[in-house]
Image 1 (tube, rainbow, N blue to C red):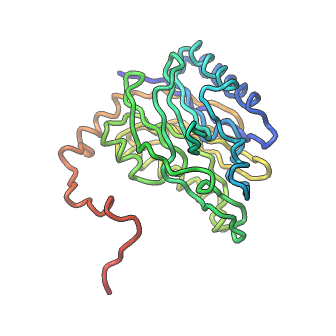
Image 2 (spheres, rainbow, N blue to C red; image 1 turned 30 degrees about the vertical axis):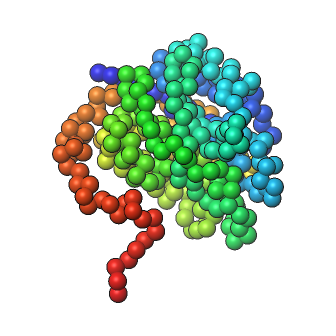
Image 3 (tube, one colour; image 1 turned 120 degrees about the vertical axis):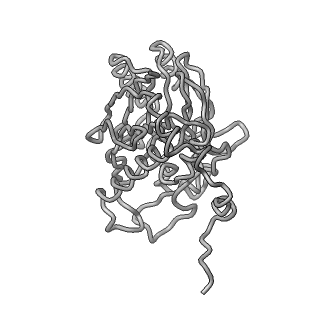
Length: 309
C-alpha cells in the first residue's frame, strides 16, 4: 500500500482586522494537531491567509493589493514552512499572489516534507463578475482582482504518488478532474471559500449548495478514480457566511471523512493511493475506453450552440 495520512485543516472565519501573523499561528496549531496524529500531508483552504476580500468592491483596483502576497514564503509565512519542515509534513494552501511582473492570481501551492515549494497552481475557473453589480445581494469580484490561471492543471510526483491541485469553483467543472486524470492523478487537493447563499438566487439555500458541493467532489473522484481532499474556510466573515463542507472522498466517490462545524479543525484519514488502481484499470481505463474523436466540441467552443430550428 502507498498510504498518505492526510489532514484536511479547515479554518474558521478570518475577519478583515485579523493579522497574517494571527492566521499563521492558527495554521501552525492545526499542523501540530495533525502531527500528533502522524499526518504526512496537511491541506488548508483557498485564500487561507486573509478574509475573502473579493466580496468587497475597490473602485481603484490597486487598493486591493494589500491582500496579496509578493513572495512565498515571506516574512510572516516563513514560520509555517519551518514548522512543516520540522514536522517532516507536506502541505498545500491557497493565497492571493502578486507576481514580480505585477500579475494577480488566486494561487495554491504544494510543499514537500522539506518545506520546499514543488508545485504551483493558478485558479482557472474564476466565478463572479468584474464590476460592481447593484442587483446582487453581495459582491463576488474574483474576476476583478484575479487573472485567469495560466498554468493549466498540472500534477506532481510527491509522497510516492501523483498529486494535483485546484481551487474552489474549479471543483464544479468536470474538465478540471479529467485533465488531471489523464496525467494519472491519484489525489486532488483543493481549498474553497463558498458563500452559503447565492447572491443571484436567494431561494437556493445552504442544503442545496452543500449538495452541489459534495456532488461535484464525488463525481470528480469517481470518474477519475482519485482521492479528493476538499477543505473549507467557513463561518461568518465580516458579516458574510461561508459554508463548511470539509471532507475527504475516496476513489469510489464515497465521502469517508467529514468535519462538522465551521471553526478551525482537522480531520485525518489514511488515503491508500493503490486504491485508485482498480478504477483506472477497469471502467475508467482511459486508454481502452475513451473516444477522443467524438470530444472535439469540448475544446472547440465555449458557449452553447443549439441545433437549428
